[in-house]
Structures are given as structure tokens and as C-alpha cells.
Amino acid sequence: MTKVLEGNAYFKNLITIVTIIIGLLIFMFSIDFLTVSLTELNNEAANALFTATSNPFVGLFIGLLTTALIQSSSTISAMVVVLVASGNLSLAQAVPVIMGANIGTTLTSTLVAFGYILKKKTFRKALSAGVLHDIFNISTVIILLPLEVYFGILSQLSAWLTHWFIWDEPVGFGEIGLNGFFLRSLSYELFSLLSWPLLALATGILLMIGSIKILSSLAYKSLITPNFKKVRKHIFNFPFRSFAYGAFFTAAVQSSTVTTSLMVTAVATGKVALRKVFPFIMGANLGTTITAVIAALYKTEAAISVAIVHVLFNLIGNLIFLPFPRLRELPVRLAKKFARQTANNKSIGFAYILLTFFVIPFFLIYFNQSEVKPETPRVTLEKREDVAFVKEFCPTKPPL
Image (cartoon, rainbow, N blue to C red):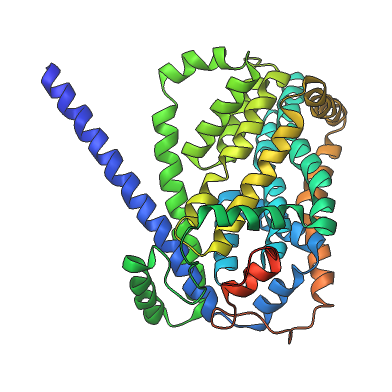
């Protein structure tokens, strides 16, 4: 009997490992295929959308709205990596989009809180946990977006750090990346079969979302075990341990929406206090950057810079709040106050969701696009070179 059980366990582990490898290969292929598709895509609507990101505030709301619609900041961050790698976005344009994606991904935890709307006390606790993630990301954006707009702090720093990760000659935008040796030819084959750029783009997005779902569901099933439930009550008493666990768990699941939604339930049921959950949520924010890192590992140095921007944004936000208990208390108090008011007047919560995540971003993007000139030339793979990238974002480095 014991041998049979061991054999079953070994077989299950083998299936899990094979599935993870398949999921990673699909994810890598989706990134490469999207790069090829976006290179060939050249229509007026796409050009207008890409050009709109020249306004950092519009870029912020593009990231917010698209993430709120598909509910996956991992997908959006990976897409931004592809856009930069294909030359459709500059690094400076990508930074606000990444910031917006961090805000947009918080919608899920807020919606989960509304599942407790019929029980006033439970709803108040759940909503405070749901909007805590919102408040943290919005606060970080308020601090870092002006610094990026006026001083380019994130884009300049990430471009400088990129050269610490690249020792050889950088890969050109028109050349094959590290994954191209076995995936680029397959990407071209599939693109030639589909023949229509928009259809290829949609296929690439679906492949990416599917691969992320495969990887996240496997990690979720592996981590949510009876042992995890026993450990859970011990980690929240230590802020840095809670932060580390939130980062690890989210990196494994590749979805901060999953982990933060779990915290909403934990707070709503009274298992964990709100202030003890906050470090875990901050860790989840950092852990979700793993997708952009994976997407950039086999891309150009521009794409690596985008991944570093994502990590820097979340890391700096954590460094602002995590080490200082009094600062950590401010978002907690704001979340509790908002939850109390919404528990007494439910329309406040609905108005907050509609205005913050949909109405304001949509109208800002729409009216800005009407002012954009479609004929503005879009930078293509063939026209842009890494030398220009280095000169623009790392002027201290001599030309290659």
C-alpha cells in the first residue's frame, strides 16, 4: 500500500513538473509571438493608442483601465515588455502604464469585498482590506509619478541598472533574443498561417493569459494545503516575515489579485487584523513583478529595463511604508474610514469603483485620442537601435 501511495505521489509530481514546463514554454512563446505580431501591426487605432502614452497621465490611465478590464497586471506588464521590445513604446512611456497597471489590479480585491455587502460588519472589514491595496498603490503613484515626469527617476535608474545585467554586446531590436533560437521561427510560422495582424495579436494575448492561468492554478493548489493553513496564523505577527511570505506566494502564483483576495476573506472572517495584513499585501505587490522579469529575461535590454522599472516601483513603495510603523498606519486608517462610510452608504463604494477604474480613465483616454495626430510616425523594429536607447536613457555610457 505504501509503495502504491508513493508511486501515485511520484506520478502526480511528475505531471505537475511537466505541466509547469509546458506552461512556461507557452508563456515564452506568447511573448515572442506578440513581439512579432506587434511588429507587423500598423493601423491607425494602434498608432493613436501608442502615441497617446506620450502624455504620462494618459499612459497611467491606459494601464489602469486595461488592467481593470482583464484583471491581470501580470498580463499587462508582460505586454508592456513586448511593446518596448518591439519598439512601439519608449521606456519613459512605459513607466506610467506600469504604474496604472498596479492600481488597476486592485479592483478584484475590492469586488471580492462587495460579496459581503449583506452583512454590514463583515462588509466593513472586507472592504477595508480590499481598498487598502488601492490606497497603497495610489499613494505610491502620487509620490513617484511626479518624480518620473519631471526627473525621469525610474526610467533613468532602470536604464543604468540594465547595464549591470548585460555584459556582452546588447541584442538589437531587429535581432533574435535568447528565446529566438527555438521559438522565433515558430512565431513566424504561426503568424504566416494567421496572416492577419489583429488575429495574431488576439491569439498571442489569449496564449499569454492561458499560460499565466496554468502556472497560477498549479502554484495555488500546491501552496494552499493544510500545512499552509496551520502556518498562516503565525506569519502575520511579524511584518517582515509577512512581507516575505506575500512576495514569495504571489511570485509563485503570478497573481497579486489571488493573494490579496485571500487576505480580504481572512480579514472579513476575523482571522487576521487589517494592520497585520498590510505587510503581506506590500509583499504581494513586489511578488507580482516576477512575470515582467520572466518576460524580459530573453529579450532586449530595453525590455529588461521595463522589468526593472516594475520592480523598482513596487520596491520603492515598500521601502517608504514597510520599515516605519507610523507610516504603515496611515493607509490602514484611511481604508478603515472609507469602509465605515461605505458600510453606511453603499452608493459611495459603487461610485468609487465606477469612477476610479472605468469612467475617468475611459473619458480621459477618449478625449486625449481625439487630439492625437494619427500620422505621427511609429518607431519600428527595423528603425530603432539600442545605441539610440543607450544615448537617450544612459548618456554617461559611451556609444557602442
